[in-house]
Length: 209
Image (tube, one colour):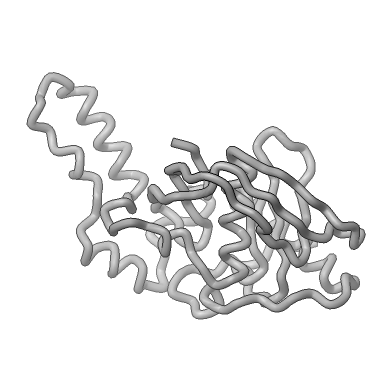
């Protein structure tokens, strides 16, 4: 198997809707296993096929506590329940994370690598990751779910802010928004083909807030 190149915004492939897989043949399995290698190489939780330039409806995931990766073909969310605010990142937008709304629980259906039907009722990180990856196959990025640009933040800036708060915890006038980039800075990042940091230095960890 092989590690493939991950596409970064604003690559148009990330905005295209992937096509249904008609037959799970050797090329589909090769794609899926390459995606697993690519996801692991980048320390990601999940990856969708169009992130590596392929418009077939294939996603892979591996939860932190799991030893084996999951391969799902023609995945779909068939039911959503509740809402919660989560912190989310993406290998195609390295160096940034944002707060968005995701479902509390979902019902999910797909085919596995042996063409067997898989049905899951998921919550917590698994539900979030499944929603995130199925969004990718529909040309949707997590940034499309941001309530405002201020919900997006740079990882290194947020770390600096945390240190400042610890050093000056008694200063009630401290501006907690210092880590949030301006609207123009966000637009510049989202419109640039060059990622701010190497994807492997900013894994797409998904966190529940």
